[in-house]
Amino acid sequence: MNFRNFLILKFKISICSMKILNCQLSLNIVFCLSILWSCGESEQDLINVERAKKDAELVSKYGCDSYEDCLSKFDFEGARAFSALYGADEFDIVKAESQYWLRQKDYKRSLSVIDEYQTDEQFSEFDKLQAELRYNTVSAIIDDYIEERNFIKAKEYALKLDDTESKEGYNRSEYGQHNDEKLSPFSSQQDDMLRKIEKAEKLLSK
Image (cartoon, rainbow, N blue to C red; front, side):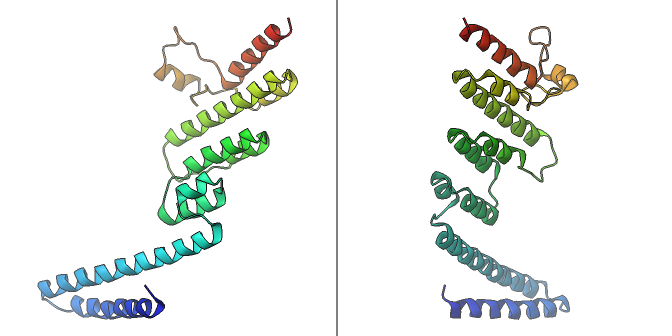
């Protein structure tokens, strides 16, 4: 849609607003419904035009044409911009960016991406996903240091893990509600990793 048609559409919206005001003073239900239906279409057209305009601006700015395209090019800022425009879940971006920096061995940045993630969701499922992602990322970092025989750095990262929650993000009381502690006793994230490092250190030091 060119600029002239865009202005025409905005004019139609303003006319609709006046018609709706007149409709409120009218007792003709059929007339009112027809006005609301036609104006609703015009407003949706305007929303679509505005979104298409912003989409084009993002394509020009970031050089990728969609959320998925930006992710494939490791342009996480662009992916977030498309995510904000279309209401996509940002957690997929967090996972992709964290893993990208992990592969680059920028461990601090990999973890900061996870730690800075915020959501408006009010239930704890997202906290569990975030905790699990953080645990798996630290575990991968520790694996790298174990491979290098750098057990001191491995332990430093183990101590960054929570010492009150399991790897699934459950505290001790929650853990018993989801697991049979006779078969699988509670173990904190930190304890899991320290045992892993201790075992590797003994085996590799022989």
